[in-house]
Image 1: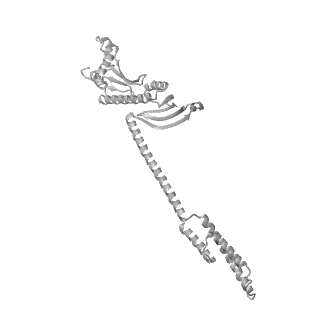
Image 2 (image 1 turned 60 degrees about the horizontal axis):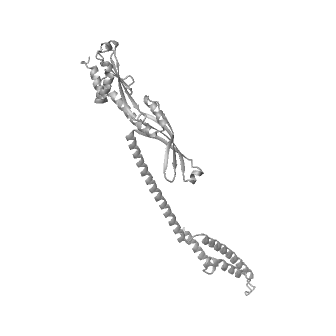
Image 3 (image 1 turned 90 degrees about the vertical axis):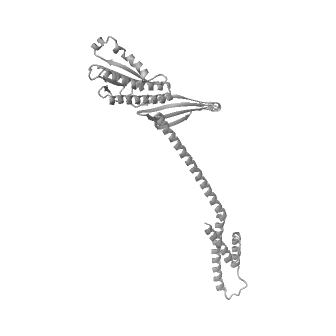
Length: 345
């Protein structure tokens, strides 16, 4: 760009020299007009013998003058419209600096965002491992409910609509809830105004009543907390039943598989006798999750008549007492051994 502009200046200077003087662009036009007037002025001092030849030479000079005039005018306009090289270089440097600064800021911001996103993902993975709850999809819509009267009192009212889906181990759920936020100069309050819970069909009948209670109370925290402990107890029950089935395959019966809530104990040498362990997982009104194990007996009527010490009748109560002393696994182990060994037979 600087080279082309130097070329323009050289042509202007050259044009001035060809015209007979080195002047400013503004003076070129005045000089060319004066020269034109001089050329067009009749030459009264010359003799008349070479009039024809002189007339031809003057026409040629006029044509050259007009061409030179046009070129000077064009060059002058170019000089006026074009910035000086120093100004242009300064503008280019300024533009480059602004672009470089903008890119640097964007890169720094992008780097910070990536770092923050990575930190959030790590925290989310940690919480998922800690609680067993994974959120797959989430969306949020916000509606401003602030009216003119509230705005005058510096009160802001916002309604948030949330929708999410996820799972807690093998249980899948979908939630839709609304949060109403009211903020004034001194405080901020928020309350869940609506809660809807959709559970995928499961074999856990205990969840149905709990979900209805959580929706009625609009207690989102209780739902997540209780769901986590409920699933952990279900997993523990499943592993315990599976363990005893593998250890005592002939004595232990799981009619509904490892996920069953009942475990039957039979003595192959004593047909007609069976003990049934019913293991329920209850969630109380406050969301506390508790295991509840009961013992049921199936014996022939003749055996009941012969049970003078009422051992069969008091077996469920003795089973609960044993649970409080030994715990779940030790109590089941003791019961299976005492009912299915050769000595008991």
